[in-house]
Length: 172
Image 1: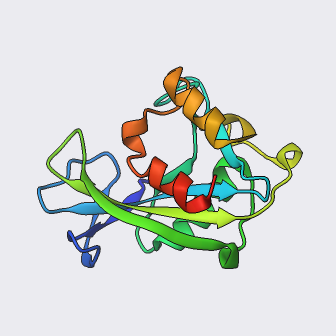
Image 2: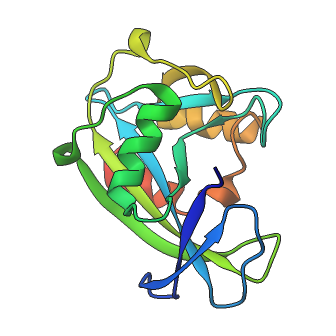
Image 3: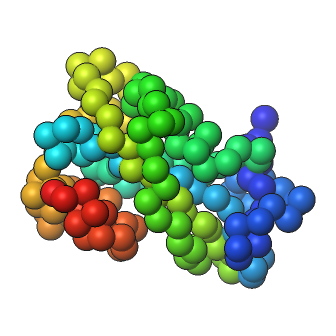
């Protein structure tokens, strides 16, 4: 069964229309994306490595994904984290850090990205991967994330235009 996305207006309001993932969007149409940063008490972020064969294969990333029709951004953040790395997040540990819009690279549509920050511990040895998407995980300091970006081993920084702001907010 095809994955459907709610079509949103530029303000994030649901329009009542949906679109199948992968189909072209029109100018003024947006879909919702959630990115999730998990920060432990040591000031480290839980990052995962993308599996080979997909987009950005082998690169490190934070967890994220597109909201399916009917899901809000928090539900998407919780679901994507559970699916991609097997970590169960407690909603009370999360906060919506940032929301911004951007244009898609493959059609005239756009996306609204909600960036979530969860301050939560997780046992790295209990991480469970979704083989089609993730193959490894680690706790990484701000310095290590920046190093991985510089070495082109992390998804490009332009995908995370808020990263310096996030690091400053987190006090790392």
